[in-house]
Image 1: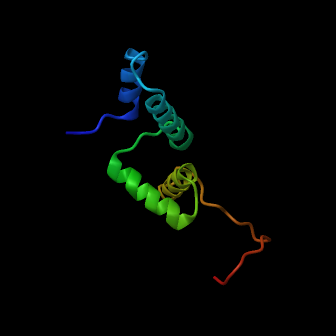
Image 2: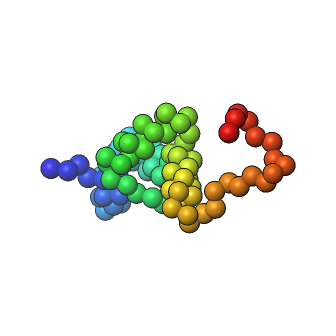
Image 3: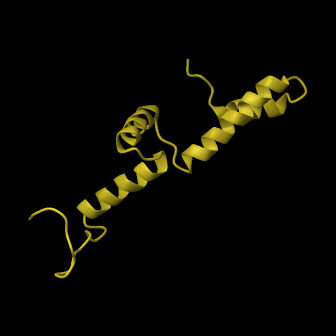
Length: 96
């Protein structure tokens, strides 16, 4: 059986507000705040969230920054966005 998500727990707490303990309500509110702070508006499946967490750790970026990076890379590689073009007078690092 799947564990109830935070939204379901909050709805249940709202339905029985007089019966829920202060500690339980505090936990629900903190969990909700954390989810809101970290998730933005994109909800992903558990396996994708886990992969995203690992990738974010590798990149040393936040979840949202990693999502932005992945989308930009995909859009550039699939020609939806122009690749960063350099003019002839631009300085570059490395060798060609």
